[in-house]
Amino acid sequence: MMTVHDPSLAGGQSHDARPHAIVIGAGFGGLAAAVRLGARGYRVTVVEKLDEPGGRASQFRQDGFTFDAGPTIITAPFVFEELWALCGRRLSDDVDLRPLDPFYTVRFHDGQEFHVNGDDKAMETEIAKFSPGDVAGYRRYLAESERCFQAGFTGMIDKTYATLGAMAGALPDLILRRAERSVYKLVSKYIKNEKLRQGLSFHPLFIGGNPMRSSGVLSLISYLEREYGVHYAIGGTHALVKGLAGLIKGQGGVIRTGVEVAEITVEYGRATGVRLADGEHLPASIVVSNADAGWTYTKLLANHPRKRWTDAKVDRAKYSMSLLVWYFGTDRRYEDVGHHTVMMGPRYGGLLHDIFDAKVLADDFSLYLYRPTATDPSVAPEGCDSFYVLSPVPNLDAGIDWTAAAEPYRRKIEAHLEATLLPGLGRHVVTQRLMTPVDFRDRLLSVKGAAFGMEPVITQLAWFRPHNKSEEVENLFLVGAGTHPGAGLPGVVSSAKILDKVVPHASTVV
Image 1 (cartoon, rainbow, N blue to C red):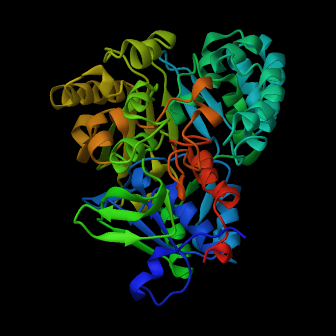
Image 2: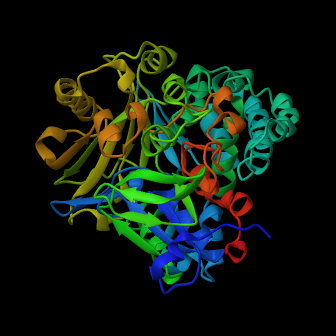
Image 3: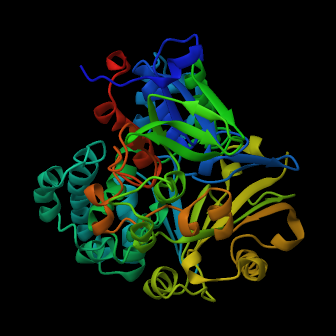
């Protein structure tokens, strides 16, 4: 039996005899961690800096419109169904999840569109619109995508990589899949048409990766979408957040919002709780951080000597790009615009180089346009549309002055949308809000304002990422985009599943 002292019982601070676990951050990783810890016998307290749960997946309401602040594409619903099952419930009891068809539309700079769904025949017809000679190659690409899914998702997503030996065990499959080859190169092996190469390789951007250098294993996303679909939760992605918060409450857990953690307290090399910004100390047997991994080590453990994740190492790591997000509502509906639209700019590789490497704010851009009112009119007043549009931009290493750059850049995006998909847009916007890389740093506490934490390059995956069981402090665990397996809803939620393997069951805590 593993013995862990529970300091939360000292001094009669709680009438609940269960060992106490503190989760820092109420993003999807933190909420999923709280559910799993509750199911394993812990009394759980989640502390969240923002005024409501959700983290990057928070939601705000403005002038009668409802806006999801962050993730909007829901794949792999089974990772959520597992959490509801742990509580003796079904996901459908609390969340109305709707499959989308098409999953999304890729719109190229010349106006040609590529509609993506899960039907093989329909997809082959779409491929043939661009290049009939690529249909056979597309079939072979899908087969490779499935093999990558088996190696990189089924084989790795909920595994622990605490040792190099564990990493070595994954290498044969990664070598077989040529994991060092980029997603774009893998797609290009099977597809000759440049537009189709772009339309089938952009997915790493959804998890902070550059398609030109993210491991080809991430092509698994094509199979994941095809096999499990792309979904929308009625009321917005935040409906899943509310559902998870309800599960935690049903387990007897507590979510404290508007509470910022200043420090993870450590005694004799073990995490003993957290100290809040107002000085309050919350003792606990274990601490789980859903905060940005770099922030966890450099800020929350600033006073603790670290061997691996020093300030210098955290600073040297490669980080994802950031985002500029413009949320807006219109007093008319644009019925021809789908739920998800990816708008490709005139350049692909060159723009990615500017964002990730040169770190300059280019004159051109690619965009992701989200119109939830295509499926769910409840998130806007009658006769209106709710939107957000995001543009990948360099993180704060670029030194861009966003106080000066944000509004001119937003106006360029507005002009482009008005000239393409949303005619008359400027006359119809009735509410808006802007989010820049500075907000990712200051509001979400992301190192360098990176929207997805450390970039998912081959040298920053699995063992090379900050571990789910901290290498620096006993009884400290990490979940979320900054640890294994990485960003994106399936990855973030699955990082909490790893806790079942590395956190002692509450029954062993005395």
